[in-house]
Image (tube, rainbow, N blue to C red; front, side, top):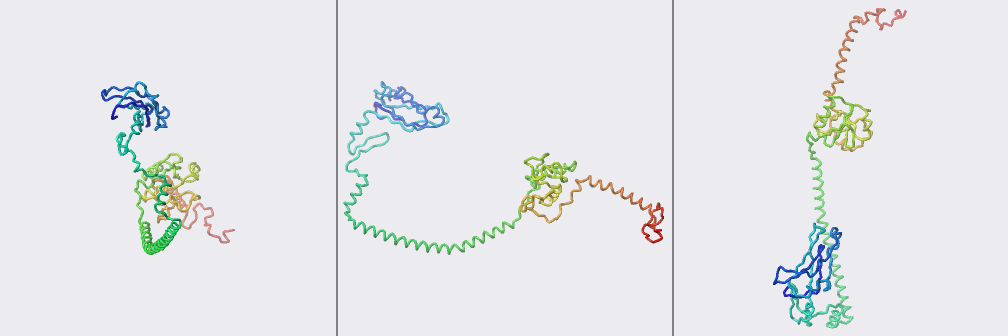
Length: 380
C-alpha cells in the first residue's frame, strides 16, 4: 500500500481455494507478519472434489478481524491460499478489496478537476458542466424544443421518407432481377460444360481397370473350414488357401465364411447349411492356378439362397464355362482306383477272346452254334 492504514473490512473473491488467510505487516520489519483474518473456509472437501462454488465471494467486517491487529496501521498485506482437498487444480483469488475508515472521506473530499489514485488507476472527479443526462425522455425533449417541429412537419417528413424508401426498394428489386437473369444466362453454358466434363470423367474412371490384388491377398477376409477330406489332400488345400491370404479354422464358428466340402450331406455341411457359403474344392485350386479370385457361383453346392448382384458370388465372370480340372494332383485315391481296374478288365477281355472261335461261337457251347441263327430248323 502507498501508506500505512487501518483495515476495517475485507472483501474476497475466491478462485478454487479451500482456505484463505490474511496477514499484515510493515515495510520497516519485512519478515514480521501478524494474522489479521484467520484461515476462513471457502470450499468444503466435497465442493473441492466436484469443483462446485469455486468463485464464492465473502465479506468480513471488523468484527471478524483480530481487533488488536485491526486497530493498528499497516502498509503490507500477505494472502495465504491453500487447497488440500484437490491437488489437480490451480487455486488462488479472483479479487480482494481492503477498506479503511479514511477511504469514504477521501472520496467525498475530491474537488472538481482533481485526481485520486486507486491502485494503478487515477480517478477524476465529475464536473457539473460536463454532466450529460442519460435519460432518453430528457434527450427527446431537448431535441424537440431545439427543432420546434410541428406535428404536420413530422408527418410530411415521414411520408417523404416512406415514398423515397419505396422508390429505392422497387429500383433495387428491378436491378437485382436483371442481374439474376444475366447470371443465369451466363451460368447455363458453364453448367453444361461442367456436366459434360463430369460425365467424361466418370466414363474414364469406369474404363480404368481395377488393380488386381497381390497373390498373398487373393482370399483376404475368407475364413474357411474343411470337411470330408483326408490327408494329403486336406493339407494341400489348407496350404494353398492360406498362401492366398485365407484363414483356416478346424471347426465352424461365427467368424467363418466358407465351408470347403468334398461332397454334400456331411455333418459339417448340415451344420453350416444356411449360415455360410458351402463351396467345392475346385474353387481353391482354380484361384491358386489362375492367380485371381474366381467367382463362387459355379462352385456352390447349393444356389438356393443365391441373390443376383452379390459381389462375393458373381462380381467376376471369367471366360471359362467350367472350373479348372487341375485337381488331379490332390485326388490320388480316385485315380489309383481307376488304374487298378484296368488290368482286371483287360484280363477278362483276353480270356473271353480265347474262349471264342473265329466264327463268333464259344468253344464250350454245347449246341456248337451261334445265337444269331434264327432259322426254323434251329428251333426244332
